[in-house]
Image (cartoon, rainbow, N blue to C red; front, side, top):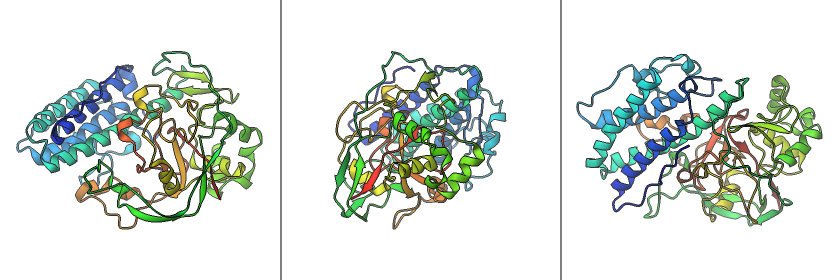
Length: 426
């Protein structure tokens, strides 16, 4: 993957927005550099999308919500793209069914890159003149963060597709041979209880971008609790597997046990049956015992926590512990593309490596309001049958993550870089 320079600070907010737009669009192209044309088209399951579709949809977002409403006479490259690359915005109009995106051999990859060039040209021209317009600035920043989410999805979806190929192809070989790390004994750090505030700051001078589901900032009551000072490792999870964890219903939620038995799960998603190798973006590799266990469903994370005599943290507990820590860790910018063992003492791996499942259902905060219009469908419509994850992963852009960030997936999802941290009540 080619190196893309982080944009430097600019004198005006509009200049920063334009720089962030250019940087993000270039980063998406850089993620595609290792790919062959055939890699862009495959869809390996209904929850994943072809790389070509991600490239088109992120361009569609800027076109639909900024260029069309703002530029009089904007020359639409192809009117059919509004239908083909709409993801789930019912207020915009009809959309092509998600499970069949892999059938779209046309438009071609070349045509999709031409579409991106077309959108980039008009967005760059617009931002050169009107980036200081508050509405354009806000929508462009939202579009940048939306594309960063799809950068992560490009990698997780590709990993799933490559894992299904008997040739077990490599997205990118490891640049260096990294020796298996060492994870010290897990220690629990205590946190006081009380009435605290969580959620993103909004309307203050230092407030940065946040999604609507991070608002409003509000008070929560937490009892005294403790969190593990690092993520659960592959070695620790292997103990659960060897102790019959996948055969013992006493550790599982009812829906989780039904899923385990129906799907035949016996170990984490990308482990092989020898439980010594796993599939990675660098192809099959030996499992690092000290690295965080990854690609777990909520059900598996919850079952392991019960087996370990602990529980999953709530999202409030996680955020309160992370709020005073710098956003640093094994994130996409380091280009390692795989979870690694901890390198520091204290509360480690709060950001990066793997998304951390929490015990919190994904619902709106007290007083939550969606964005107006079609953009109100971005987050709010998914607040049902989902669970919150925190902290980002090894394929999350560093500028995208923060302590208040709320990711969400259904309980059975395993193809994301998702793991766990243990919690206990004091």
